[in-house]
Length: 138
Picture 1 (tube, rainbow, N blue to C red):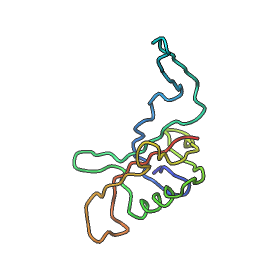
Picture 2: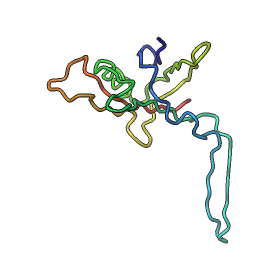
Picture 3: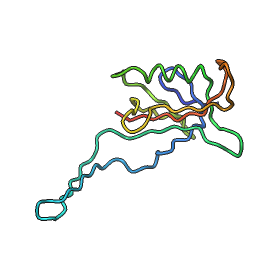
Picture 4: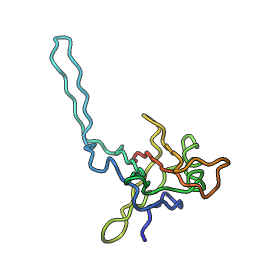
């Protein structure tokens, strides 16, 4: 079985990369000029590709859930303001995994979202959570 790795944290291989095919390589701004004409500026982006990994639902079952222990390790990494770059390693169908240098994407949403598969009090380290992880490639 292959896994996705964020540095040394092992994640399920079947996390869905929801924005893998989202166009991101061209930045664009559109503003009206004083005459009312549109000014369009475009440039090739050197970095900043969003990478969102997410648990999915198949019927009544979550796919690619993580334990509370893994979730807490991810949250600890995300809680470091100005934290170091991380290596995200994603398996591919054949050959070596693809690797990306990433940081947590705190800009638009929470970098990590999690919901328990089953709500239990008190929580156990082995409780399962559906997650969404948001990164930005640097």
